[in-house]
Image (cartoon, rainbow, N blue to C red):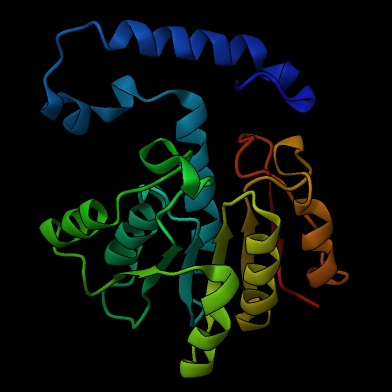
Length: 232
């Protein structure tokens, strides 16, 4: 399925090789702790580039005052990556990382088989086990219906990074409507699928809110596809 989109044909061979590697990896007798202690041995370079991208952008804004929002938290990889960056580089600031997801996936009618359905309780447990509850805050909500009320109750909240990773038109629109005005000057909006067929409405919705700010990319990572520095 990863290769079905026209714009991803240039990555076809890389993707095929990676998933063949994953299949082989699952047949090997490797201890779980090795995946943690020696993770660069196992992770694909495409996946690693994503987190280098996020780190690179975080370093551009870590001295700005504001929280970090992760919209479309799924299993919490981005949420906890940013959380650990804050733990390392901002241990004495008030910065927190807020995750927003309804934890029902892309198609809630599919139940347990819904695409991109994270487990809310498991994520909370992992945060607690790592003693990161003071930084990592998870909001279980329907963004299309509850985000406005959330910000009415918390009008003071400001963000220096907002990452939006969801492909549903209504969620994208509501997220940008409410987060863009609360992104501080110099803050960064990160979109996972701008200019990508996989999320056909994303480009127009982004351009609806960002005005004349430039849409940028980095040359070493294909995902997220873009970022916008709020300058104008």
